Amino acid sequence: MESLAYVGSLAQIAGRSAHVTFVGPFQGRPIRLQRPIQQAMAVGVRAIPIASLVSYLFGLIFALQTAHELKKFGMIRVVAATVVMAVLRELGPLLTAIVVIGRSGSAFAAEIGTKKVTEEVDALRTMAFDPVAFLVAPKFLAMVVMVPVLTVWSDFMGIVGGSVFGVLGADFTFQSYFQQSLLAVELRDLYTGLVKSLMFAIVITAVGCREGFATGAGAEEVGRSTTAAVVISIFLVVVVDMVFTTLFYVTSSVRG
Image 1 (cartoon, rainbow, N blue to C red):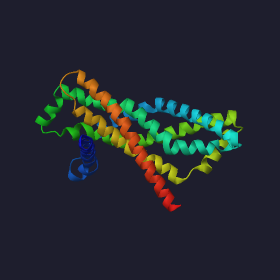
Image 2: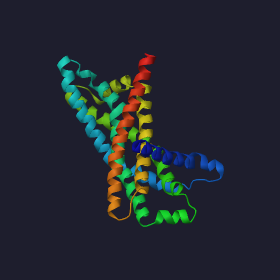
Image 3: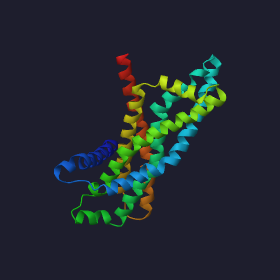
Image 4: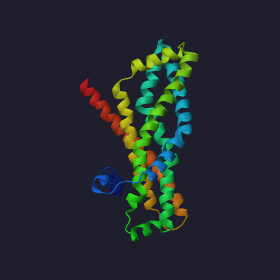
C-alpha cells in the first residue's frame, strides 16, 4: 500500500505540473519563461559534456563487445546495425536518464528540501502561492523539453563511438559505417527512444520534487532526500524502461 501511495503522490505532482504548464496559460495563468529557461540550461545545455562522453564511450564499448561475438560467426559487418539499434532503443535514453538523475534529479530534491527546511515552502503557501506551480512546473517544462533533446544528442554520440571501432577494427569507412547505420534505422527505433526519454523526464522530475517536499526537519534530512531521489529515480526509470520495452515488443509482434 505504501508503494501505491508513493506512486499516487508522484502522479499527483506530475499531473498538477502538467496542468499548470499546458492548461494554465489558457486559463489566464501564463508561465514566466525565465525560470524554465534557467532550468533548461542546467538540465540540458550544461549536461552536454558529460552526456556526450558517457554515450560516446558506451557506444565504443558496445561495439567492441558485440564485434567480439559477431566475429565468431563471420558477421562483423553487422556491428553497425547492432550498435545503432541498441543506442536508439535503449542505451541513449537510459544513459541520458542516469546522467540527468545524477545532475538534476538530485539537485531538485536538494533545492526544494532546503527550501522546506528553511520554511520557504510554508512562506509560499502563506502568500497564497502554489508551491507546485512556483517550484515544480518550471522544472517539469524544462525536463520534458530538454531530456528528449539531450537523448537525441546522446544517440548521435553513441553511434559516433561505435563508428570509431567500425573504422579501426572492422574495415569500415566513416561514410560506409553511417550508411549501414541509416539503412538499419526504422522510424519505430526513433520514437521508441523518444517516448521513453519523455517518460523518464516526468519520473525524474516527480521523484526529485516529491522527495524535496518530503524532507524532514534538520539539515541532514536534505542529504537523505537527495540520496532517496537518486536511488528511487534510477529504480523507477528501469521499471518504466522495462514496461515500455515490453509494450513496444508486443505491439511489434502483433503488427508482424
